[in-house]
Length: 236
Image 1 (tube, rainbow, N blue to C red):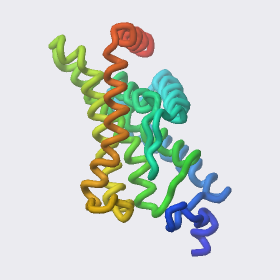
Image 2: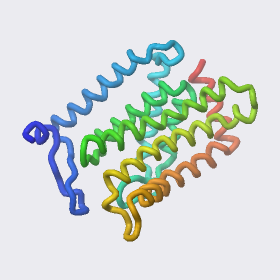
Image 3: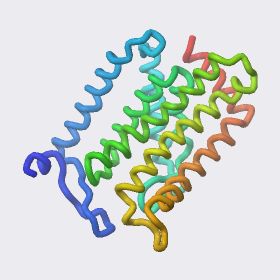
């Protein structure tokens, strides 16, 4: 307990429970873990097609910054966490679509750790892992769209690669958000609702609305054309 209190302190979560916030030592430890994780991941991704170049790292860093900035522009905020933001998930999904699953997942994990450092909500270590690195890392599943784009010679699939990839990334995040809501926040379910349907509905509400808004925006011809140009630039 003394070791735990050195890294985190318990505070009232506003709902009659206890949540934990990192102490100064805890924040330092989180930063070290983030840096070490990124370094280890960079070495472990050994296959040539998944190696991360200096350009990819730079582009990924810019997208993480943009995702973080837009995540703070909240169109609607849910009472128990989660919000509809200004396309923040798109910027992480773009890395997967541009560079593949490996780069996308790595960027998502880095973004999740950044969110953990800046705006932590910690009940337990498993909940922390599910809600931050795993949930945001799953946005990298958008990389499936990258492989669809490269593998198939079908114009329809090529046109829809980003949309397909983005949806898969959002579904990945939704899966972990559902797990977290079911296991760790099920006690807050609405009256008459079980933990499973509550988590499905609660997390599906804000993630689904943001996904729908994003899909509409990226389908607009000027936006689609701009994204295509940026894709060509970052892959030169």
